[in-house]
Image 1 (cartoon, rainbow, N blue to C red):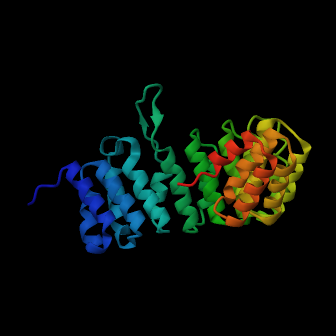
Image 2: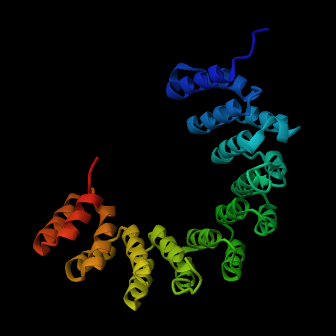
Image 3: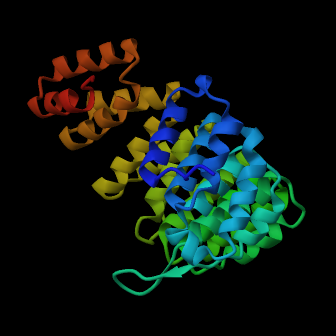
Length: 325
């Protein structure tokens, strides 16, 4: 029996497969690495399966997951391989319910510089998404439990899973979670973004109510969620929020969010701010216009305004934000 390759040699071989997949039989050449003793090798092999969309290896991924779960703390420190395997299965929309139900309940406390940390928190979130994407009837039930998980990656994963499920009752869960809030504002931000994805028409007005939130950072997260949605209706609520005023940081974020919409009204709004507003506001508008830097027509309009204004500070912002590689 041939000696298994060292970790270094195995990682090099996986890299070679990743670079030239057309030269390999993926099922034959990648599967052995999913059985390697090193969790780093297994994780790299699983990530390569995901990247190459090698769905024929799904059974091998499941087998590797089950092997590691016999003693995960010993066989997979940091939960690296279990996470990579699950990520691959989820991205390939594989209906590996056995994996997802095992992973969604897995807790793996490990030593750190401070108190022990739970390495399996991202795994729980991924498994929720796996159940949601396969349309499992218990997906939302599992997500409800995970919304109260002690770890941020698990709660955020549950929110993404609810959006993935695409079920109307998920809107109620997300609205309740947004209204109750979370001790970590990034989780609330995930919630607002998920609502705009799951129920766009009805969610713009709901998310807009958070723009004036007194909680630190929530208004900015709401603005960015609206911008990322690229919904036409989001322009009105974002531009109205900008007109209402606020701190310089809040108004800067609103201009960024407006730029993210990449719509004609958004572009015109930013152009007008660049043309007419004072230095700091014009500079923020110019930074937002960098989203359109590859559009030659927009670039020409911006350059003309910069020349007309003759403002050295704006010229410096333009040189920085519109620099091309």
